[in-house]
Length: 257
Image (cartoon, rainbow, N blue to C red; front, side):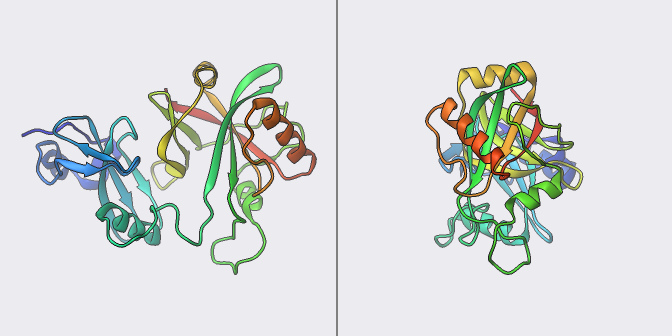
């Protein structure tokens, strides 16, 4: 029986037309599955389902997700993260999700509207829960901002000034919910940050994002911004971070709706 599967062009390019045809015909795809995004059960016989291909340095794993949670796509990860994904997908052991290893910080993301050059702009504020070490370096210190600057983010001196557009990066919004921040990858974008469960945004935020097709992404080290309950408090925290020289930003095109 044909299942309600979506196979994107980038996934098809990785697995080949023959394997994609088998999946779409209901061969090799499970009827029920644990959604790789929200972790709840799905059924490809009864609801639209996305194929998600995790690709590491040496191996690849095909997973499934509710189409409303995440679109069909290729997600490129490290081999260590891929093994974590395998354990998470199969339920083996008590390992955390693939993108949150015990020794890694979690990236917290907050959405809000920020007044920039006289216009209310949709913004995301990214702050890790712990200092970020440079890959391959001994622990100690916080390399979060230097790593971002190397990727093209620029220091913020005035929150009210429009950041530069960062080429190759984008913010993925689907069905009005925030799914991921994507960065350039080998041939296709990869997730820099991905929500375990799609995040709700306000109607005002979504309307502004749809209107401008651009999202401002502000990043600060752990303990700089915190969770602010109101947008005026968020703005004050951003201003203080900019004044202290610990805020970087970039503008990114909106992907999705």
